[in-house]
Image (cartoon, rainbow, N blue to C red):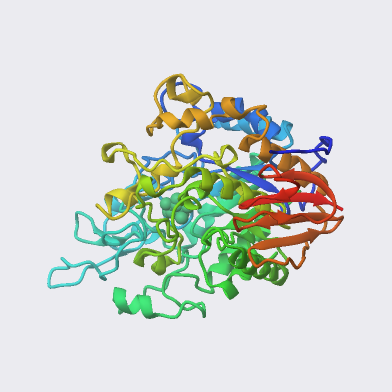
Length: 562
Ligand code: GLC
């Protein structure tokens, strides 16, 4: 039941407010899988523009657009061939401008993804580097090295890439280049001033085009120290990551880059925002989030937890402390394009949907998810129940909430994509081990039936299962108790109730029940257990499940006002 007695309120004027991001609900769009206006099977910018009324009725404050730049799609667009254009497969710069205007007219901000660690191997600079040969200024924009062995036939080091397989690839004249991810994603050399200058140009290009903020991909890897001799993989994994001196990850000097970016961001009115994707140790996060740096950094700690009261409480307390340290606001994430959807994670037995458990994760500290759990182990209803409870918990927290397209539909991961239909490089580079991330990137179902469930007029670039229709927007729109209506009510109320960025824990009689109060008498109760729990006095505003004789059932959250 999603019961709301509060009237809808008008969106406050946020477009000129420099602090709009602090408690924003930001909706992530994976553009190729959102809405397909031209029926070619790939989502596009016109498709997004057509769905702006949907985003407005959902009640989000901002959209974060995953990469939409020209790309051969070796890594779903995170292999960028041109940072200052739109992929012709999904639109034009004019389409981009129309989309931005439509979003702004609806009072929704626009955040775009910037991928500065690596480009596509199809980027003009990489092609020039290949043509120019060893020792050239063109090669110096990337990380080229001679190999080991008598004839340089061995890679400069034995490092494996984040996606599996070697991290070095040899080019025709015998040199090797570094790619922390796929071979189609050569790493830039950030000690080259031209690289730095070019990214400033890119950030200005999009800021001038009215973009409100940036999400910075792999923000902790740009600065590297690759002086000889390179450590072996085993040695690399032993090097301390907590002091800013690791050869690759989270080096102190990366902040010089962001200090420069911050000056650029602050030259706009309102200042452009930025959020770092930085998988770094706890005490190192505030520097990315500081006002002299990017301004905000993702906290992925909630995402890596089981559905558990003690774990959630610890993470929230910790994240709020970190936010206070940096002066930024907290960021909450339950799903994104890299992990198994939370409705599915919470419906699988613990560890089957483990996050951060592979050797690869430990290398980068990244929460890739092994989607290896058998579908039969999945308790769908339980996963959805818990996901609704967790989302309502998340949306009541102080700070900004990052939502991933489809979570407002309670959508599950698609676990059974045929091997030949898969696209994610992590699947191909880890045969038989890792299913990859395609399961959370399947195009959204807008209608209950019809071609590609209303995603477009043709097929969908990743196959949609039959059950998708039941989760479609059409099936849930206006349906009392649907997950979509729950999110709409929550986002509307959140805007009304949101005050200072603080919370106070309220003690409960049970260890599996959490409760907190936000300023203004907004009380939140989440029952992580299975036995119903009595609610405190107050006006019930919203709940993720119908009350049972006045009590909150198991695996549910309620919002009250006292
Ligand atoms: C980030 C992105 C992920 C991508 C990787 C390489 O972690 O979120 O999707 O594959 O960077 O760019």
